[in-house]
Image 1: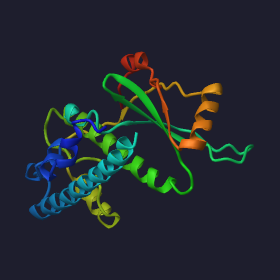
Image 2: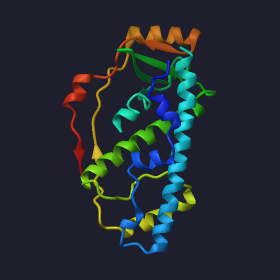
Image 3: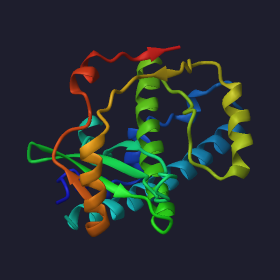
Image 4: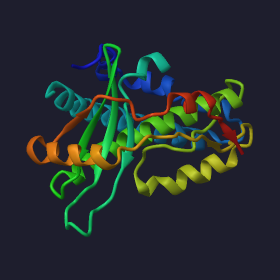
Length: 69
Length: 160
């Protein structure tokens, strides 16, 4: 049986991933040009999307695995 | 954050090898699971057919959990100020650009973290029982904890 925390696991969104993985506010990095800040933000957004997808695939495994016992 | 994830990123506790003498694939993953105050350990065989799938799932769990912990520790050592994560999940073609940009920012620290975990791996008679069950059911539920909880409490976080 899946633990109730899987409800959060399966319904979390990109903002949850961003917050939980402590992704930065790129505008705080004054060493970077605005163009570099935009690129960094885009890459972090790509990472958060892939992270969310990985969570969903783990959920699929956990649901199949735990519900089968 | 711990409460959000504590039961959804399970511990994948061990991988064992091939039995060359018996010419059998003897590799297994031990997954520790606690449910309704009872701890059990799932034993999952890695046959050639199952291996790629389980490897992929295990890798995702490993990297997500490791990155979560790493980022949480970096958040602490940087006194809750913004930092650029050392691990991100992006296309390989973008990795060089990410590293280049991250290298320009000097306003945060990026130490390495280490820890030690002691595991009671099954041996002898237990392994024979597990292998026999796996031949028939393809999964074995071990009704005991393979992690040394006392060792966990005494463990140390190493920052270098």
